[in-house]
Image: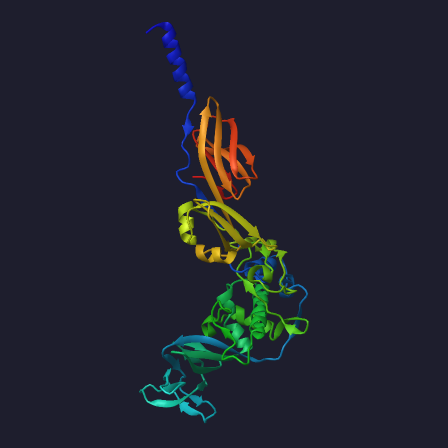
Length: 437
């Protein structure tokens, strides 16, 4: 081979050695991130503890989360709690109890009882031997000792009734005994006294605001209202919080306030209309809440899905574009997904939250696609997309560490960046919590 031909070949080989395309991302990915745990309206339980650790009293905590409200002592009253629904129920009344059907006379009962639907309507109570004690549309069971429902003890009396094919057990209990059974099932009993007292007042107020005389019961014993465990949930510290705030209730304009609360708001209280729609409530506003930062789910650990997996989870096609509309509480109002082929589907924030199993409606979805990273000598050209559009960092793997090479700000979602490689062996895109594959 002549000298000239050898020189040309060497030049070609040199060009090929300095111009190469780094592999594109195997699949475009969508990163899910977010804040908070629960609806975020009203009191944040972790935020309340953060305020208490900073020296706030329970009164100050309540004023922070329900601005414009006042505290008043209300007379003691009862609350009816749906505790259990089964095709047949087991009750225990101890050594001395009474069962009263409708408006009849009380009948002495003791030990274990079974409540079943009655063929002619209503329910009937059987004693331990299987004999019928009494029957009616409603039966109230009272006892000297706490009554067990499904093996668990509760204060107050128990109402049993038929609802379709099941029997309902409803605990009719004094409001402060009810609150004793709520607090430790809502927050750790080891938290500061002012946090527990704020929770006691919020729990009492919420229950009283939910009383509905025309309904069979007032509240549920689970997250449809607030968690209630009866005597199982009572602790010395939470009992003290109830006693220390006996009868204290949050009021607004002469009415008991509906004191919604949740585990964590992610750093911003949500206005009720931004989460559930409807009219604004003057004391349930969108406000910053920095003390919620101590919450474990104040900021979620991000997770990443392929665009195809995201589409399957949402019940749509493979996602190629995302547009998010937020409300004043920073929660997601709706998301429009562009799919392969160009079709678009708009889903509400609550629908996306439900289908993806997210902790709150304050979430983000970021699609990143590193399409190519082509070297030319000591420079590299990076092409990709981000959706929704926004600032993106270009990072390179240098000596085992990811270093910032440059940034791109795009309004269209299309990414193109050219800069020095800094001898990086690989490249990636980063936008907040999202990292390209």
